Length: 404
Ligand SMILES: Cc1ncc(COP(=O)(O)O)c(C=O)c1O
Image 1 (cartoon, protein in one colour):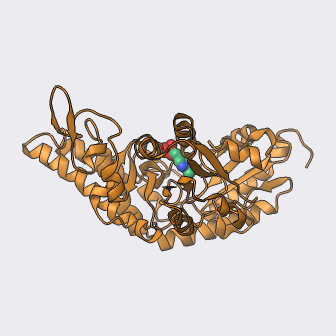
Image 2 (tube, rainbow, N blue to C red):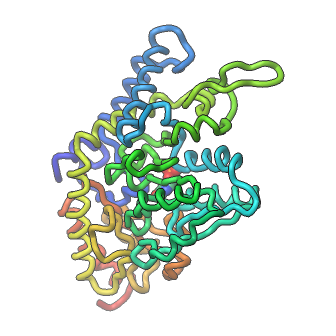
Image 3 (cartoon, rainbow, N blue to C red):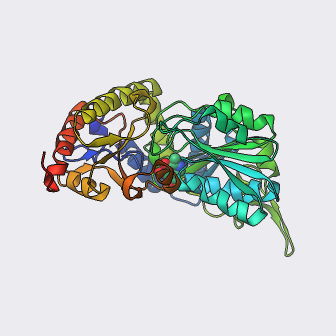
């Protein structure tokens, strides 16, 4: 137990060891309370009504946008577009900026360790526009070898990379990637789904053109995500979805678009979850990224040290715990990851097993059955939980009928 647990109703009983934080984090009570408070005190359609509830709903929604802008160092809240999740944010860029600016023979550089959410939109764009996907390979520790950067060049239109891999956990040198891309006039799309929960992300410092993340991976509700974009790019982009709220003026024949960011937010907006996300951001800031990073390092070091004492375990990626952002992907020799996960579940230990939506990475890593287990930690996990996890893990092979 630690002081945070009391804030997380799902963890409070102490019955579950939740090590699947890279998939989604748990929600502190203040987040669900903020959502409940929204529906109880200002439940009206935001941006539409001229009466108090609607005005307050709009205010809550726009306050949340301001909080997101501050969290990631955006110059203005109008550069923050609310989406459903990181996946939708990346698709938005591919379908708008991409379709307008990428042409035949252009190249889109993606990293071999990307989540499918940062591959498939670019595959679709490349197919549609006759462009080519160029793969930046990764070394076994998850880093991009220096020689791979020469693949970014005159033909590159877009460079799309995750700041932190959801499988190997290694942070990528995003600032340097942006510098190289900009030298050739390419724009960068940074998938920050796994970085925003673990480290201070500053879009101005990185000089990122676009950056995407999901609320639910940083203590917020499911169903709300963020797209940050540079103002000049967002201004030039056509809308993604069309309908109510995203227009300035409509005639029978045509329409003009609302100002940023509303041009990209068609239909009734998800204001209740935005209020929840704002509460999550307040909570994360009160914990502090310094503490989160220190806790990631402490727990990951303990976890990797204890796991390395267990025979027949292979840990993928860097062997340095400081390069994992709390993510430890592994296999138990001779055991299917699904079996490992199910055995851990008998003691209510939650880990992810499978391809982690990163099949191209699984293929290049050559892992057995294209599949691994992943334990992913967050600041509310404890050393005691790490011990219990490793104790159970040590017995998995025996449970599956292997000798010790
Ligand atoms: C690195 C990375 N990018 C993108 C995503 C997609 O996030 P979502 O499913 O919330 O859109 C994930 C989800 O696991 C991820 O880990």
